[in-house]
Image 1 (cartoon, rainbow, N blue to C red):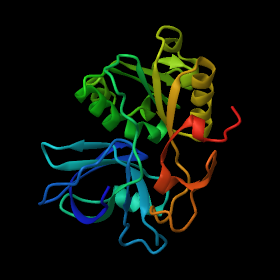
Image 2 (cartoon, rainbow, N blue to C red):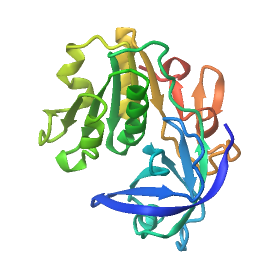
Image 3 (cartoon, rainbow, N blue to C red):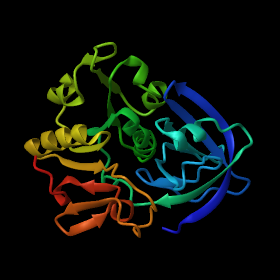
Length: 258
């Protein structure tokens, strides 16, 4: 897909949590096509310590408002600067980057979307697109506690939502791979994004059940174009740049010990 360097305008900046901001960006021109699982490289202005763009997953695309959403975890100076953006500010982005999730060929109600932490971000747009195409996705979202579960109302618009929290404050206590829904439905496809240990656990479960599974890797990225080799992942096809060949991979392409 063609990539664009755009100056987008902040339509809204919502602080969902102490450590998370939802940036809604718009443009006077129609935004380009974006697919679930793709990401953007966002320039950070005004930071003396941030020299590289920040790779952020596309959280949602609201075509009616000509908006693209980014769920930003505020962990360093760069992302904290983005979290301080005000309505009307201009933010320079490169998008859409990478390859997204594979859409099922036939309508299904046995699709499981598993997200953990900020890895829930791409699951929202994926769920919306699946529902739009006649599927009924099931969401399984994990976090440390109830306050770390984000956008639950938005997810619920597209399918049933199940949750786990490590402290038991919302949903079932434990990890996503321990949720009882996994024993109730024979899923045909799993999509997941989140911390690597979580994704590996989900991939191990999928492999043990013979379920097709795609993961969205979160390797450290710098350029987003496959030039700097920061995000290389060892695969059955050799070393591949996650930003260019991914970030979405079928687990059968990865050399994970699961």
